[in-house]
Length: 205
Image 1 (cartoon, rainbow, N blue to C red):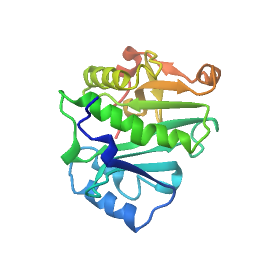
Image 2: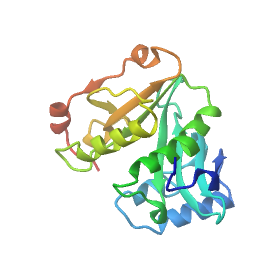
Image 3: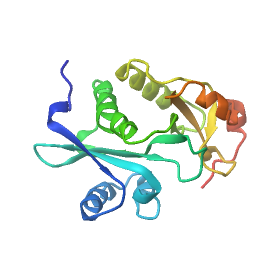
Image 4: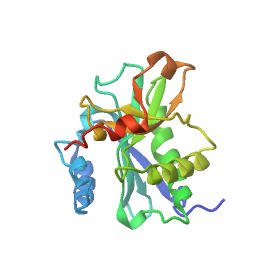
């Protein structure tokens, strides 16, 4: 099947520590002054805190297309990790509503599955904060497209999972998960809050 990104013209490099090559990629990312830019500065995106940080490159040009990592760093049980942490798609390669599934196919084939291949976590979860205070609209589009691209690879619970230790909206996020060992997520049994509880929290800085 045709894919916008020509998967045969892409390759993945996984970084476990920063280097000049990765810092060139970071600088390209930071040229975009969007609302999430602060997530990618050196103080917030620390390669060494990840269990691998992957960059998908267009092979013919050497340009980075997408990047993200696997993250635990002691924040979660040792057998559980957050997947596609600090995810970024470079502007030139961003999907449109017409080809968004192609972008998620690329994410799985060139970021998610390669990162899983070099790790042995028993459960991976992916989170996203709401783009507007009272709606899950973008999350629902994102989730449907991701599931379509991966043949419903992910489990879709309701509610919000806490991703950082502060009790504010930005630290409780929509999520999906994948057990590589059955019942790992259930045995973790993290606290999950519903939408009304989430609405009652302060937004957070």
